[in-house]
View 1 (cartoon, rainbow, N blue to C red):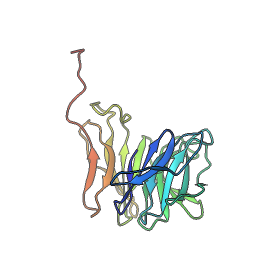
View 2 (cartoon, rainbow, N blue to C red):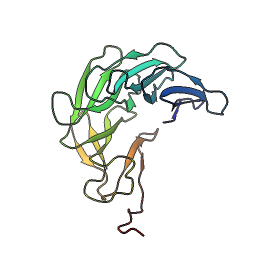
View 3 (spheres, rainbow, N blue to C red):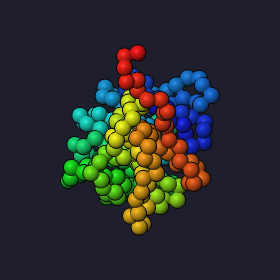
View 4 (spheres, rainbow, N blue to C red):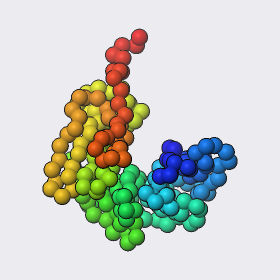
Length: 208
């Protein structure tokens, strides 16, 4: 789970269930977390001073934050739902993730890093995956429905599609509708283009 720092000089990654840090040019890596339970999904703050990550320390995925230079992690979420950070606001104030609170419907949740307050921004009856806030903070892009990443060649009505929602107006629309998986969709720095992982080959329909 490599995560490149905003200045491109360091990379955080997961090794043996802990978060590690190394120079992007190579060399010695140092552990930032040391815990018997699994720590994963590192995510840099825009200023490069903080790392958010998810941990199974309480029996389910919760979100933690810690200084990128090292230090004690601070727990941000406490719900029994699985919470995995997927995006920071550009000012570093909010984290975004997908969860279902007080409802069976998946939602995009905005979490205030300083106060711990959260609110639902988008709700759907289908799965919401890896929500990403746009550079200008006006749009959210996410993967709707879909199979896990280890089924990248699935083709069919359940394939993960890219959806876009405007936070001001609530306008929501599908950007893809091709029955193929689209994974880990990200904003490009200019906010005008999106990067997604997909594949053109279908899963073979016979043993050969």
